[in-house]
Length: 318
Ligand code: ASP
Image (cartoon, rainbow, N blue to C red; front, top):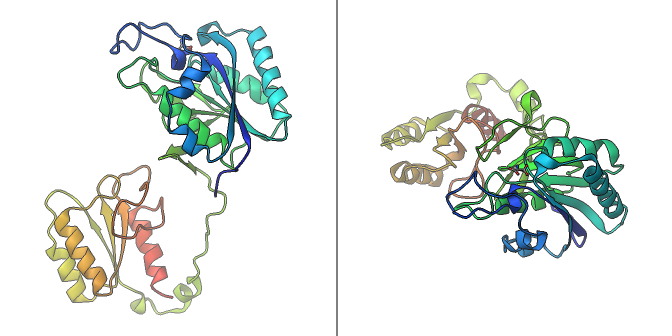
């Protein structure tokens, strides 16, 4: 699904560590929050212009504080600014930069008082802007991808590549970059390479196009699909042996983001040339392959190797 286009995205800044500065680049704790203005935060993300694809940015410094000092008067002012902007038809959504300490409270307050289906995305940072590797610019970039996504609604929080609902989000760690959790509810989704992946994509096709074949075809005639794993020093002879024995499909659980040892990759490419259907997935227990990083076709994203085997077997029944 593509992002909405030619709309206005409003950035409301409130301070926090994302706008914090320290005297030393290695100091992650002895900094002063709420020092940089909203334009400086945006200037730290040069890639934003391209990512906006024609959308216009409007920014406002609503307040400049450490969110440990958040108060009801600021909440009211922030909610009023949100309501003002959300009422403009050309505004697609709002990104709010906020300190992490009370982000979950502001998120829930806004969720309770704003009347809109447009997205309001809070984002933040665990390291000040002056850190060796600050997390704020990436979080802001990710929040922008979420606010522009057509499936984004209501008040959300984005931190460390994860999207949380206002209802569930909580700060659970005082230091690490991935400081928020949605507890039992789990993340609403993730932002990877500027793309949003929702935990519930809404329209996963459940019944395979060749389902009827699986119900009718004698199982002895079902396609043979094997599962292999990439690992240190894999032996390409296992691929040759499978091909010689008549395998019709191979699912490879690659390492990391679907990487494959060069010897195995050569054998699998050769197998493909010989008519074997090859699909790539990852042996990592969480996440899924991001981007197109291999010459091998990927299995349906999010399926582990064993489920990818089932889907490929069904594909081959067609
Ligand atoms: N004390 C800071 C704040 O909440 C912490 C942070 O932003 O990470 O503003």
